[in-house]
Image (cartoon, rainbow over all chains, first blue to last red; front, side, top):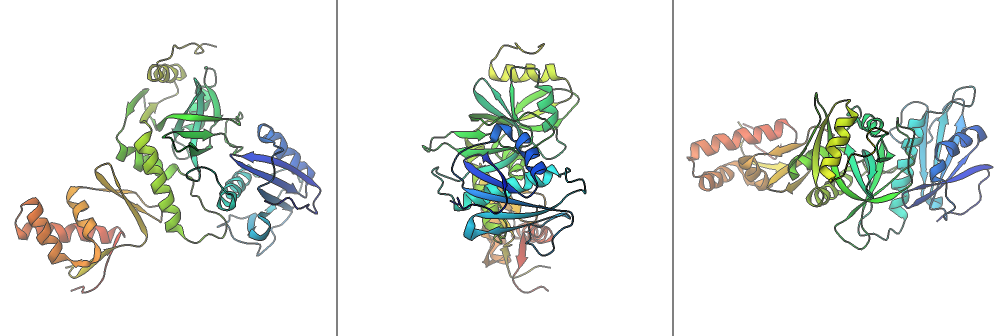
Amino acid sequence: MNNEPHNLTFSTRVQIGEVSCEIVCNNPDTLDNIKSLCSEFITNSPVDFTLVLNMHDAITPDQGDTGSSSGFAAEYLPETDTINAYIEYEPDGQHFDLTLLNRLFYYVYYSALKIKQYSGKEKPLMIHACGILLNGKAILFAGPGGSGKSTVARLLDETDAKIINDEMLIISRHKQGANTFIIHGTPIIGDYTGRLNVAAPLDCVMILKKSPGTTIHAINQTEAYTQFIRQVVTPSYIGQTDNKAVLSTMADFTGELTSMVPFYVLEFNLDGKALWHELCRLEGLTEEGTDR
Amino acid sequence: MITGSISRSDNVVWRRVDNDIVVIPQNGQQIIVLNKTAAVIWEMLDGECEIEYISTCLSERFDVSKEKARFDTASIIETFIRNGIAIQSENIL
């Protein structure tokens, strides 16, 4: 753990799953923005990892490689459990590309997991999915960008379901080794504004498929496996080179998940009532909340 | 024509899922689910088994003629190579 003081004055601490990340920034406006966006995830837990945001009006060259896009570079400093990020911002000092923050969050998360003594049987993974909380359990809606994760979140916004996150979640095995997977909310920012810092047992996974009608049907393990594995966020950290080991981790995790958790395909359109009806039917719930 | 020994590419990860074999390329290309015949061949691609030996095993396992087994083996292995999931170790004639 790294509890060393930083030269930069402005900081806050954010919970990402079991990882407590100290965010240090040289720009108070940017930090205030992050604090506001991540208000559900502010924590006082001891720091596992530090993210230093160096905001500049021009990219600082040769500051590490994340497979970066323009305006962003980062380096991992293992001796201090720190990621130093160099981010170009607009001249007004206010504008900050939130997708960069998302990328940094999962770099931080996976980098911290690499060093953290994780008490579970296996280390968790992040997944591209919308997660909802219904009847105390989590249901995932998984799919690539454009598949409708945020649309599902909006359609279910007026129901009894609570949206955990519409973009990315953490999934872990139960610590006691039971055949239970736990879903954790993340501060990752999607299109839907609400995000919950909660953990709940995973009930089932729905693979999203846009369709003229709304139906839910079960799929076999092979189909679930091939559809789901690409939704696992590659557990890479800055400087990592063994891509085959990373893919093997994803393959094994997906194998376990698909063998233990029910998988469905959700064919859906923009009919929120039909979607809620199908979910309630699957879960054996009454449809209160539909018209609220 | 492909002869000699063939091995699975180092750039893929593969797993037996349920009763299928799923091949996952590292480069993000499409995941491949092998049919029954392709799965038998895939499991023998250890870089040591030659195509002739694989086709003989296939002929016995599926009770088909050696000619058909040889044709199917070569065809499937060519598809593996074309998709970058297997590599030829030697002897391109």
